[in-house]
Image (cartoon, rainbow, N blue to C red; front, side):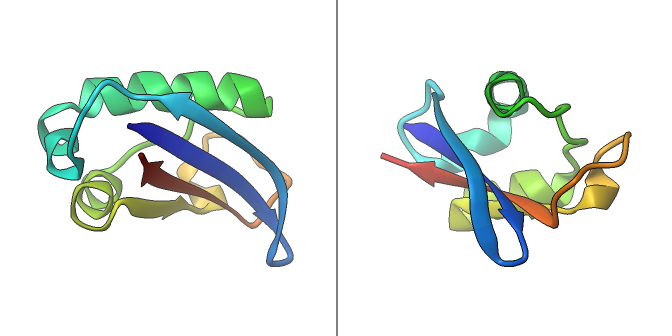
Length: 90
């Protein structure tokens, strides 16, 4: 599977990237937070942003729905976008 990260400003996608993640099913992400963090770190490098803080909410949404969103409050420093969405894709 892959994660698809999109940076959103004013409801428009301004940057995006995809990163491989070594899982086969969405539900496997629950026990693989470390893999998710590693993939998010790689995506953050590609998008030239810092890695967001991942909470249980994000992990739960990814495992249940295959999609989550990070708001500016999920980052340590200020960011120049409205949200970052992360979606699991095949």
